Length: 344
Image 1 (spheres, rainbow, N blue to C red):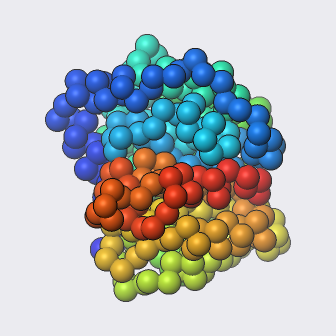
Image 2: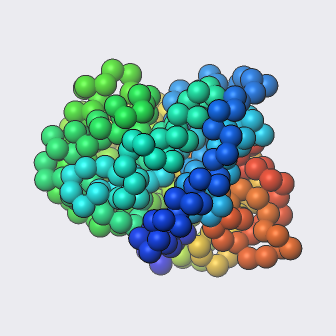
């Protein structure tokens, strides 16, 4: 399997959304019962991190998602990365390419999170669906689409998850870089994260070129972020592979931007997958993830995340991993609790 094939669950999710938007809307209505609840302040250490530093992925269209405010209360999580913003068929953003930014369950959830003292980083892209980077014909138009998302929710950060045909196209890679530079110039203080696939040794050729293009354009990315899973090459030691993948990322960022090791780690990040991944033999246990987070703390990484909150619980009766469970022995929300206090 190519290292780009990093989120099979998301591909399945998009097929489900395309097949039945009405069913998804019904699911979301059930999963957001307490939108006016307030998150507790017992985990103050999670509030100090810059926006996007420690937000695990929450996907409302799939896998029995938890009520986000109740989840925050239970875990101490103050940040969530919400997936996925796609093209609506043209150069305009929509949740899963179908649900509008305003007036739906997605906006309802975001407002509830923000009112409870939390922070949201929308993820633009992913593996499946129509990508804005491809649908928009110019960097200016793409920047305007990103800006529409930022303005809709008063965002402090965005995550550009560039995969599949979007990252494989050199022209599109350049367009994304140029659009993000415009976003940075027009939004003082906003955090921008760029997420893409990797090998155990570091970024693929496409990822390396993306970083090089960013450096050449003078784009200040707050966190170049790799997804160290679904390698498909027989890798089984996911802790070692994660460390070596991020070390390889750091080396690329260091060389492209002319930074020190410490500075380059500070511009690097990772997004793991909790539990059993999509590739046989790959598994990230809570203990493994604790080691990964400890490594991130030691290196001062700018972002640590995982796919996904929806799976952060054991499977009933020890069943197979899937949309709603991890496939490993764990406590409910154990990965999220490990990540909640991460501050870079």
